Length: 144
Image 1 (cartoon, helix red, strand yellow):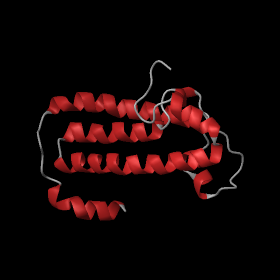
Image 2 (cartoon, rainbow, N blue to C red):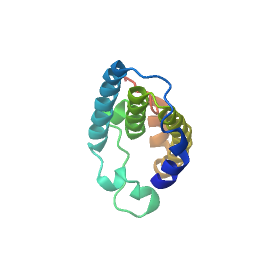
Image 3 (cartoon, one colour):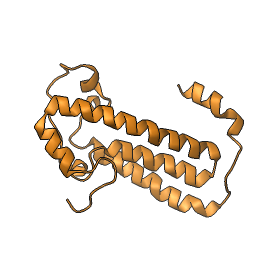
């Protein structure tokens, strides 16, 4: 997949929307924020859960709904971490291709979240519905 994306975007790799070294300051903040989100997402989650094994293998061990820690403020912290990292690259480089890939990631991420939410509702039922109604999907709730 990475090779295909690299081949498709190759013609636009040098097209910049702007050049400003100062943009690496907010980019650095977003990079750090993304790393913090990844670390917080790992708390109370196994690597198999982060990798999506329960979704692929329905009988994959004990499953429980985690609604504590970072997930008390945002339902999909990993997606938010990905968004921070992609925005960081886009801001810092000013490359049109980075901005295009970020837009593509937002669009596909929206679809992926919808599919994941339907699966979680099926798996956890009313417990997940109540959680979904209380906690935002991607933009954090700082005052739950």
